[in-house]
Length: 249
Image (cartoon, rainbow, N blue to C red; front, side, top):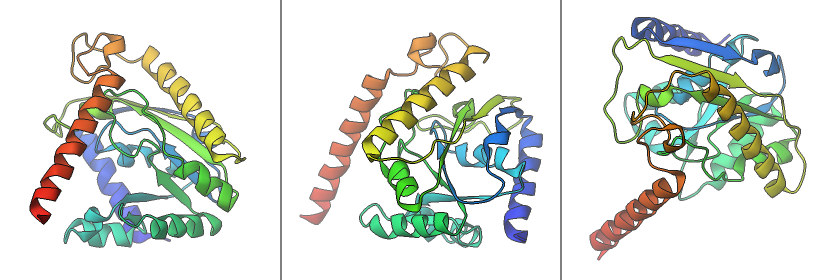
């Protein structure tokens, strides 16, 4: 029994109802009823993790998400994150969070990760980090891909929140389990390819708006291309590094 997590899920569903979010979920049968698994989720908005939790409730399970340490340091969100048994990630010392995730997986937990590491401003699938694959290999558990489309309309990087009653459609697909194998680079490449195909499939039936900021350039939207978004992120990283250097000098 997890009364805190169950309460949070109930509150989230109430918020979804108030917002009028219209969920279409397929593939819930791919969530294992027991045993560990890496849940790999694409990252287009700040609310992705709340939507990714919906299909795992079919077998009445919960995801332990890996999240940046700053969220745990916050006096409001920190106690909640710890009560839900999520995993803090300190980017300057990632080994501890990796080991904690592997331990969770070996104990039969579902561990949620964003292989892209950061929100994709192009809303395309970015290059993947190898952490999801390495954790699956080391703990000998499958990877379950989950792709979400529409989350970027609710709240994404660089644009205002839309947390009122928007009646936004949110599409969620759960892919078939991918069994671990080495090398991790090949497994990572397969995972990315699978999630790209899943995203294309979700987008085929989604009501897109021409020129909208949340629509990829490939589909006639005004979002940057993947290459343009990568260049933006590289420039921001350089600017942050320069600010840190000035502060330290």
